[in-house]
Every structure is written in C-alpha cells, then in structure tokens.
Image (cartoon, rainbow, N blue to C red; front, side, top):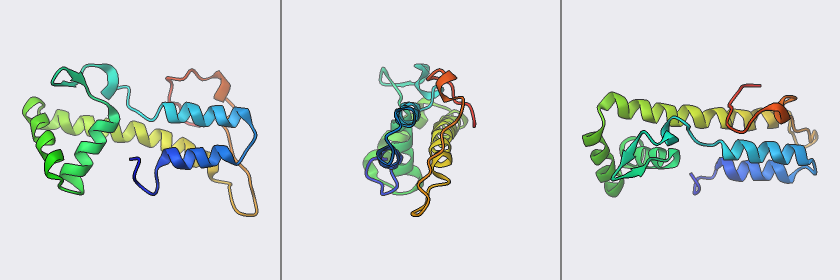
Length: 138
C-alpha cells in the first residue's frame, strides 16, 4: 500500500533512479504496471456494479480482517461476504496476493546483486520479447 515504508512502487522508482539504462527503466515500468491480478480485474467480480481492483481487495481485507480491524473496512468486508461464498472470497485474496508477489519477486530479483560498493542491477534477457500481460519467471 502507498503509506507503507516498504512500498514496492517507491522501491521500484528508487531502483530506476540508480541507472541511466532506458531498458531497465522500461522493465521497472512494466513490472509496476503488472502489480495487479488479471484474475481479480477480469470484470467477473463486482460489488455494487463496480468491478473489483486488486488494490481494493488487499486494502479492505488487510485493514479489516487480517491486521487493523478498521470498522469502516470491516463493514465493507462483511458486505463482500454476503455476496461471495467464503471459499470464493479467500480465493480472491489468494490470487490478489499471489499475482502481486510475482511482480515483487521480479523487482527484488533485479536488485539482488545491489550493494553499497557493488552497484549492479539485473534485468531479464527476455524482457523485450515479453508482452506486457505475461507474468513469466526469470
């Protein structure tokens, strides 16, 4: 989420600022664009006529049920449970987390060799060949 200290978008922007490589910056832009779940954002799942977003699923679930017990978020979460079976709701959360973790993994992989005395960013060899929607491992 945006207000977290370990926000992946901020981290990705920081990594992109460390290099003049346009290819690396495009890689980061691509990964940030894919920080979502195609499963969730397919349009199949809606609440009050509005399609769900990955960010919304994570924000509501984590701030109501899992960590913070925010009453407003809990109210929305309980509305969702009236619409979806418990297993469906849990599957939606799983897919939202899983698909986002793939992007976080890719960005983390690119920075694995980065150190104060070793400014080295990695980028997949196949990056330019991949269409934007694909989420393949490295």
